[in-house]
Amino acid sequence: MSPARSVLAEELGRRLRRHRLDLGLSGLEVAARAGVTQPSVSKIERGMMLPSTEVLERVLGVLGLADEHRTDLRDLLTRAVDDAADRRRHGRGLALLDAIAERERNTTALRSFSTSMIPPLLQTADYARYAARLTPWMSERELGRASALHLERQGVLFEQGRSFEFLLTESALRLCPGPPTLAATQADRLRVLSALPGVRIGIVPDSAAVSEVFPLYGFTLHDDAAVAVETFTGELLLSRADEIAAHAAVLDGYAAGADYDLETATGLLTSDRRPLASIPAPAGAGTG
Image (cartoon, rainbow, N blue to C red; front, side, top):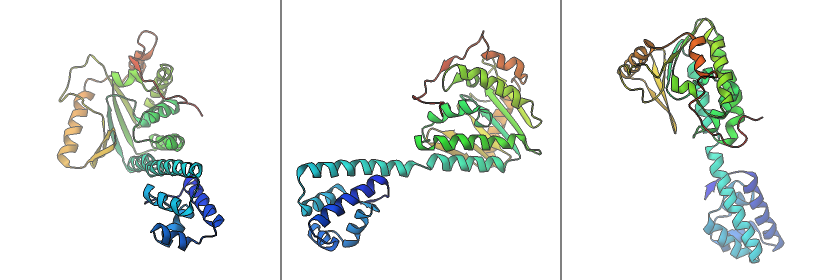
């Protein structure tokens, strides 16, 4: 049996309890005849526990229900199990975003190297919504809260006593998570943020020679304490001194060939140089 409490689980429990009462049976009697414990029957009827398929069949046998009722309850259990699985996933993405935001708030000097997307701290609200829909560890239920958290996270850029350096490859600048129209507003956003006292944004052109190592992935340095690498399933946090130093050296190497004149760099997104590619987002992205 798997624990769950949801509208579907409660509906399943209500129906089983109603059928039991129609027969004039107690929960104890159903439990004894079905070969399960009375507390289990009680939890199932209150929507606090989902029965296994085997247990449900035993209970249905005790209740002597017609085939159509049995089919409805089997379908309801299937949907309740799927809902319970979704509920277990729900919150994982937000928990990770909360942890990242907390780390950002506790970082005095943040340095980021992005190879495929605009860093979250620099994203417009629309870009963030499209990007979130394409994030494997973010569930559909979490997208609304993720958008609000996105705006909260960016507040650190305006705080005194902090420094931020963002290094983006030209490919990251020109690859959109949604329609190409996102590119122009995102370029304007980069120009605005680059004017902040503690923010420095550089673009590594496609023509730049490979420096140190090939940029296989993006990463973020948090002071001298950790390196965060986002993966398809979450985040990898590195804290060894040699790992931090190695990533800092890679960032330094590419920074040497970066263009920090955002008026020139973001010109890549104007009429003569449109985004190389636009990743289709699921229906409804960027709305609401």
